Image (cartoon, rainbow, N blue to C red; front, side):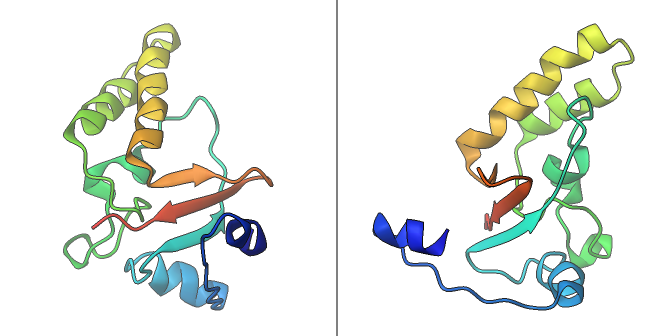
Amino acid sequence: MQSQWRAIGVEATIHNVPARTFFGETLKKREFTGLAEFSSTLEPTLVPWSRLSSQWIPSEANNWAGQNYSGVNDKRLDALIDAAQFELDPANSRPSGRKCSGSTPRSFTAFPSISGRTRISCRNG
C-alpha cells in the first residue's frame, strides 16, 4: 500500500511494533498520530457498538476499554447504534444498522482495505 499511495503523492512512514504493544498500548491508548492498520472482522448482522459508539472511545476514564480507536464522537450515530442494538426484530434493526454503516464513510475514521479484512483507523482528535 505504501508504494501505491506514493504513486498518488501520499507519503506514508511505516512504524511496526509488536502485536502486544500495538493492541495493548498503541491502539487502546490512541498513541498513533496518523493511520493504524490491523485486521478485524465483524458479523454483518451485529451492531458495531464497541467500534463506533462514543462511550467506547478508549480513555483513562474508562480504563482504556472499547474499540473506538478512531475516536468517533457522533451523537446521531450513538442514537442509531442504540436503536439498532436494542431492537429484537431483525426487520426493524436492519434499517438502523445500515444507517450506522452509512455514517462511517462520511466521517472517514475507519475503512476496509481492498486486500481483505484489514481495518485502517484514522485518529480523530
